[in-house]
Length: 277
Image (cartoon, rainbow, N blue to C red; front, top):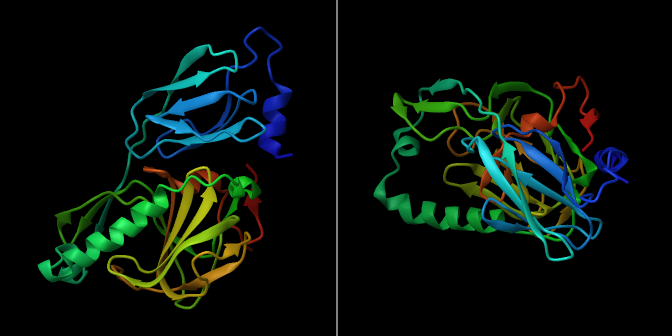
């Protein structure tokens, strides 16, 4: 049984309202939270029905600019509908200036707009996946050892022009450094050359949780392939919109973009250290 679930069950209240969700995780913008309800309970959050496992476990996530109060709804097996307001802590984000990018990656020419829309459509389809298997239960670990060169949530100024915030964690290392799956999952997308992200792999971890590995020099897995935590999925590069070799690693819960750094300890000297869920 997962460690986080053991802890939740240990503090399960012996009261008439024992069906109320037990929650554990980071109640902060970019955070991921794990919950547990009585089997048969239905859960709703952020305008959608949340997948609940056979054991009553579920996950929810909060994006970069998630509001400070968010209602969590649940319907108990007896039909009673209840709710609870979750308090989400706001964060302050850095401003990151990046210069020297080719103009086509800051203001793309009309000739590539159809390509960008097509690629974005494929990425969005992966983020809508709601697979039954909770592959994320193995916990997360760093996909490679390197220098953290960019952090989640930072406001990007590209060639002097304000652009969308950065939703990933950047890890710089030498070109060709192996990149590994941070947790178990199924390869939902494997592309050698997307316009903005170059060599890109997206993994489906179940229950709406997906991860993205971008700017890869090479992609060594194929769509539909199941990978275990630590499996090499590619090598680090600087393909797409990049000024140097690095991995842009992202985590999503459906449309909510999460901070993968919240699921990890410090960068390990060896890539065997991980944080259990």
